[in-house]
Length: 322
Ligand code: MLT
Image (cartoon, rainbow, N blue to C red; front, side, top):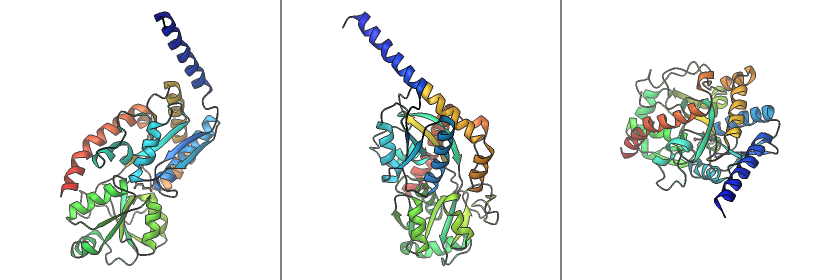
C-alpha cells in the first residue's frame, strides 16, 4: 500500500469511529460487575446502570461475571472490544490493588482502562454473627486472639475489598484465622446468618439491613467518622485500632482505546446522575459517601486509582507479610 493509501485508510477508520461515537449508544450496553448479585458492588452498579439508561436512552444491563476476587470479570472487561458496548463497574480492589495479590493478573489496573468516573465510596464495617461473644472491638480482639484458629472469616476472594478490610484488621490484631472465599459478600452474609462464618469486613451497604434487623452485630466502622446510617456503631479510631481503616472507591471503567467521545458521553451522564437528588438519597441511605461535583469525571478517577495504589500497596504488603 502506498503512503497516501495508508493515510486515507487511517482517516476513513477515524471517520467511521467518530460516526459510531456520535450515534453511541445505538444498542444495549453490558456493564460487567465482577461480584455476586445483591452485594455492594452489584447494588452500586445497578444504580449507575439506571443512570446511564435514563440519560443515554439505551438499556445498560448488569452482568455478574464472578471469580478470583473480581479479577475474572475485570480481565474480561479489559479484553472486550473498546467500542463502549462493554464497560465495567470496578472498585479499589479490582482496579487498583489486585496486582498486590496476583503476580499474573493479565491486566494492568493503571494502563488497561479508560476511567469514566467515581460512582461512590463506602466505609467498611466489621460485622459478626449474632451470637458472636463480643459486643465491641475490645471484646472482639480478646476473643479473636484466644480463638483465632477456630474462626472463619468470609470474603469475596483474594484482593476483593472485603478481603483487604479484614486483612488490615487481622494483621493489626496479629491473628491468622481461616479466610473463606465466596463469589461476593452477598453469599458471605447468608453464611453468617447460618453461623457458618464468624465475621466479615464489608462496605456498610452490604449488611446494613441485617444489622438493623438485629440479625448480625456491627462492631466497628473502619473510618475516622461514624456512619449516619448506623450512628451507634463506633469507629475503629474511637476504639483504638486506627490501622483498621478501609473505605473503598467504586467507579466505572471502559476498555483502553474506547473512543474519547464515548468516554465523554458516559462521564457526562454519570456526572448528571450523581447530581440528582433521588440518586444522592438512594446512595446516602445505603451508607455511601457521595461523590461531590469536583471529584467527578475521568481525571479524578485516574488520580484516585494511582494515589490509592501508592498509598495502600505498602500497607497491604506489610499486612500480608505479618
Ligand atoms: C461484593 O460486592 O460482593 C463485595 O463487597 C466485593 C468485595 O468485597 O470486593
